[in-house]
Image (cartoon, rainbow, N blue to C red; front, top):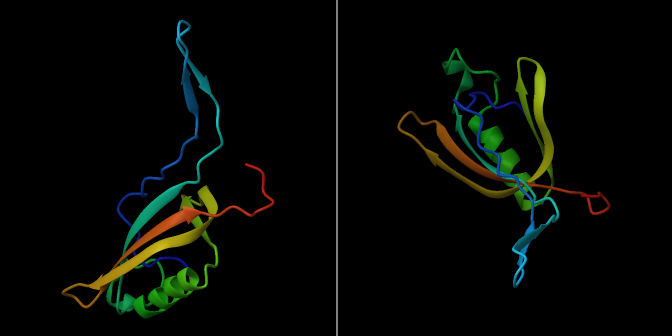
Length: 127
């Protein structure tokens, strides 16, 4: 599903390592590399009630379709693929689970969606 209205900026993607530090008595601090942390990000999207009402919509997905999709994927814990594309070049492509999903209806009867995505790793996948 392509979101109809893109956010003004690509959301921040939190990523890191679970490194550990160990302080010694007289030899300073040593750092030990750890495992890669799972990334997470939060999308804030405008989902139009009627996408054809806006000329700048990138797709014809209705808010009701988007809400049903995200709620279903969250409820059944199915991973979705989060893909960020810029000028036909893929910047980010990863499987995710939906951690949180909230929405409100604004004064134009469009929906403001707030979706937290957490990286999904297959159990047999190496880190």
